[in-house]
Length: 292
Image 1 (cartoon, rainbow, N blue to C red):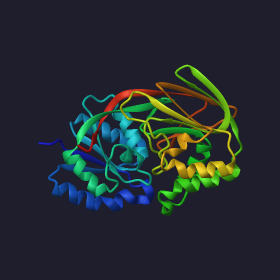
Image 2: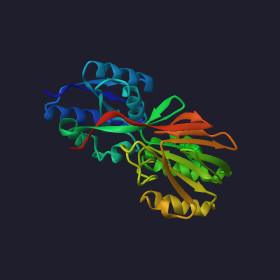
Image 3: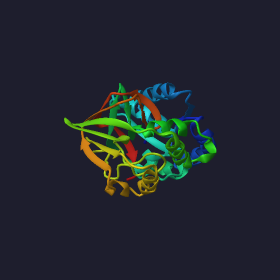
């Protein structure tokens, strides 16, 4: 018999979208013959506590949420023996679901909870926190801040909205990036440290990143015009921006980033650290149910 599921629902994600999805998700879980309980999370910390308790009981914690709760719960399960995480996409971006090949419809993704396979994945770690997807800073810091306060009705467009709003007030910065001991300094816009390939609601910011290679892909944009950045944003959705002059890509297990002024580092949509920051890959940190 399959283990019971502990469905952790974030009622605040994407303007309450998980709650609207919940009745149809429950209907599908029942049709699949899966045993489950439902609990609403009050905060990221509360969600992590519920996930650890469920895993300790031998259940599979399943997040119906955005990427923020998924990343937090993944970090909480990192040291729990035999823990397996299930994911149902309920946010605006759903970038982790994209990366593991889940259907972006939460009801369709229920089938993976019944017939998927547990696969080991890496995490990134920074400032005492872990993350599943992408940590970024610089121009991205301001774009993330704006996106997090934007109207939920914008949906996936919230990330483009954040970028365009940030563009108007951006003042360039000087960065120093050290990847496995190799240091580069440059004037530019952003530094992205990617465990996963997607961020911002489907942007393929690190098209060659993998979740199981024990490494982080580091992408940065050196000095460019505002018009050049707008053209680059269109390419990011296809992942072709990495072939553009001014964009550099490195890969390594440990990355240290500093800048000539303060920036907040965002990961999985939430602030996790300030500068300077050292970000490390955590290989095979936990198992996640992925499509068979």
